[in-house]
Length: 198
Image (cartoon, rainbow, N blue to C red; front, side, top):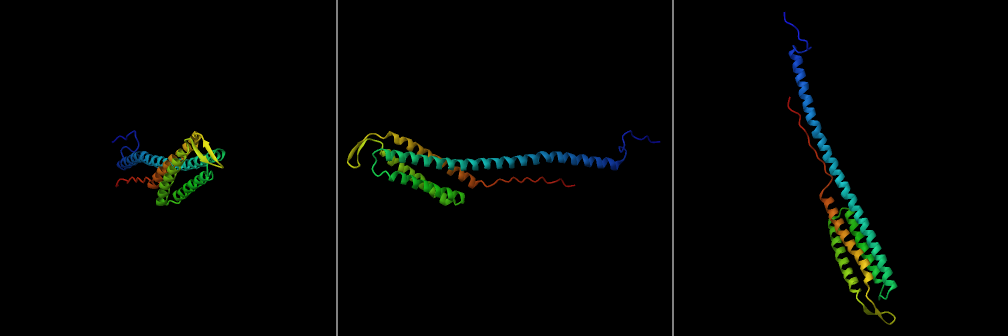
């Protein structure tokens, strides 16, 4: 007489086969779960990076606009308080440069990359020209107001000049960030794990 095992189902071949298949499936599931978790982490990190770059891009353009408005305001106060011929020229030039910055911002937001690049180049060139004009106004000279006036060195112009330089740097940084976002659309990582053939 054959003795029965103390472990139920141990002597049953069908039960053994089912247990083996169940064990294999559990092993595959345990193998698949970490891989799917890695995919989710990659997608989450990619989305977080894109959001960070987008926020930095928007923040940089807001900072550029604030710096530009501040520089033009300071410059306007200087040229109207001191002997500068044709003082209206300076704030008008600042408004023109701010308009170019606005055109470029709209081009970036509407994803017109060629227009945005042209506006960026134009903005940098115009800023460089305006900075040259301001630097030329620093040394002492005789100026014509209602009469001839000896104007001393205007080192105070270095304040708006520094702000305009920061504006140019911020504009270039924003251009690089906008280019990065344009070249890298939303990242989607699709990793399918094919089930083993049964």
